[in-house]
Image (cartoon, rainbow, N blue to C red; front, side, top):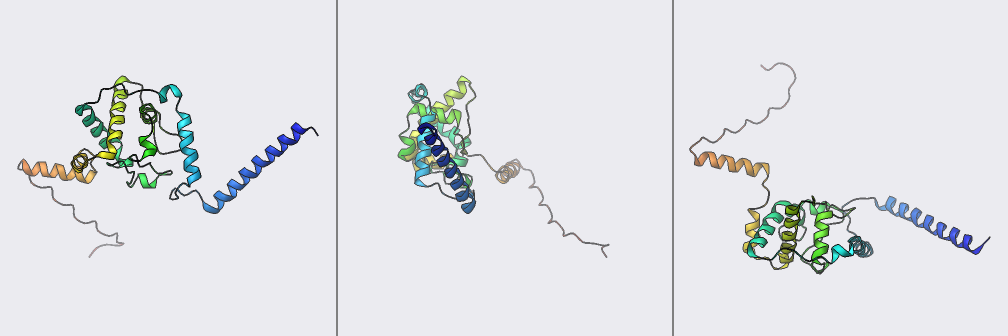
Length: 210
């Protein structure tokens, strides 16, 4: 047998053993999203993320001038669209974020802050495969402008003040209960009566009531 064929068969055998070992490992541990990615997996994922961004996009600069108004718009957009997974402070410690695999990164740390403006823009616009990060880009110029605003706000995350965090709470999407409370409060202020509370549901019974 030729050396080339021997080497090829050895390589295929190694690949087969690796796949088999992976199946055994997954079968013994399961595929629960509760697990934390290991150091090797995290390092490989971050390397692949960087390689997935084309160089021309990686080198892009923020095309929007930074002003206080731009930062405010970035904050409002982040609080409304991003905080559900990433938290107002960028930690990723939310009910949704903690249930994802891999977890959203703590965007205050160097792993995110060291990314270029172009990389942050590309990730927001195009998402990251095999994670919970969706692609938000639509191809519209106004959408791209909002994304550049977000890039500025992400840079701000490590230095957010308590006042800014408090302001963001008022910008977060409201739950159905919070919207109902707001509506009841509005009606009371306008002189309307508070809606009567629904009576508790009665348990299911068989037969006729006496």
